Length: 129
Image (cartoon, rainbow, N blue to C red; front, side, top):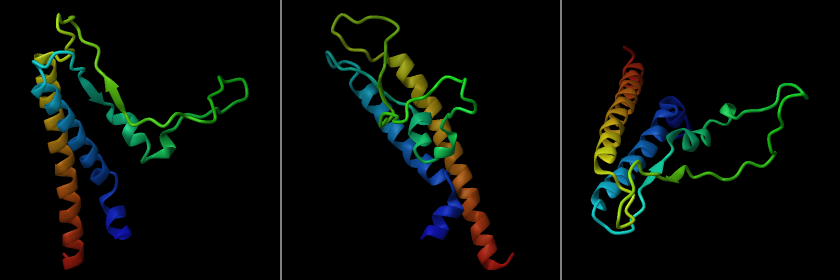
């Protein structure tokens, strides 16, 4: 199974994270009228950084700013700050959530396309084409 996960690369993990983000955005949209509901967002880059530790910043010279040795465990979840305040304390802005959902759906489709192309390439290699 390790060979297959190496062949699929980061796309398999990215698809899972994108799916989780779409579910979170859908939950925000569903709770548009719920008083005191706080809209949440999933930061894709911070979650994917866990899978690719080479993207971490580090000092290259002793005079550069120091980074802490221990970075906090970041699950990527953030509360969204609304553009306009709501009387009932709800931070969901329907137009913003719908726009973000549309973009997330496009990103999901793109990742799915990359994954389908990888599987197609593996299938051709196994057939000897």
